[in-house]
Length: 427
Image 1: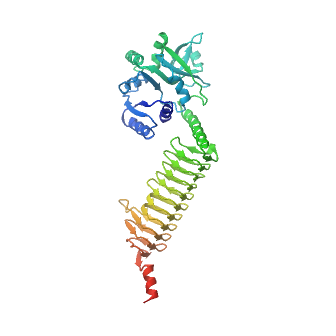
Image 2 (image 1 turned 90 degrees about the horizontal axis):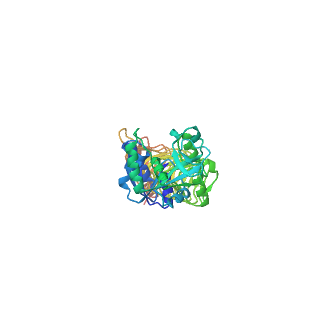
Image 3 (image 1 turned 135 degrees about the horizontal axis):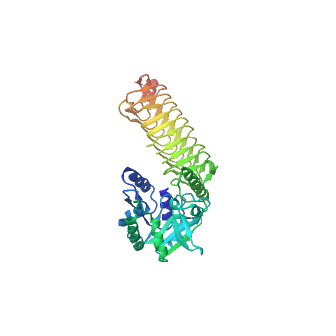
């Protein structure tokens, strides 16, 4: 949610943000996540040691702020967009600017109280509102602009006077109103409330964000068969001309190249897919795939894989921490884990790299133009040379040299094909 807020601020022209996080591991995880998805903003993080309200949170950021005007925004507004922020940033003649909106279902949002002339009179938090006040539909959005000198002095006084230990940034608004130095800026909320309070709110917000992402990609030239059956994260990007079939999930920092076909029912997570690739009903996580790569149904590419261009991977295959050269063919029902496979090598159906020796993972290295027969078991650590071959069902426990053959259970080396051909021709 906070990442969406930061992106909206960046798109509104703000160049620097201070994020207030809780102490300890939780705060560290939040910082790590936001830095990984940092928009074009200079980010600083400060810690609020105790959850003593939003006034205390803002005061915790004081040492990191040196601007005459401060935009303060709640972190639970994932639907916030620049068109709602820019009108607030234009108001520089007041001590406090508060953003308001009229909503059908205010929930637990603070209510805007006005006098009989419609002038701003104050804000009442939901917990403090009586029945009449809770019927008010004009709410506090959670986006403010303050003159720094006014805000710091006011919040210090509020924090000192807080009897229950909690103080809120909205408590500064009444002073600005009394001094006739407060402005309320009304904005439209076309997608409903901006804030998230419950799991139901989160689900509703997800629907809106998902629709925005799909609309943006459609406008850029991406083909999406069914917008309601497609899930694409905000951090993912799909290039023009790509086709996304129904049931696909494109998550995290993923990129789909131009004119690739994804799905139906494919899961792509934190991965880069090259152009003109075809991935059908498969799962790819934490890996890089080149151009014109084919991955068949029910195959799984686990994290750490780097797959070069023009590679074919059949159905029900699994790869893990593997480096696959260009023009490699990997048959169905194969497992290639902790392996390096040279260009133009053929991996037969059912071939397995036996990468675990009972204590640690071991690596298999297969050269270029090799042929690994169906149901071959390669017991790592192992090296298979260039142009080497294994027979169907072979259990290979020893290195195979260039141009070598390995057959049997366990495999034994036989004369290379080139040597046999020379003996048959004779002198």
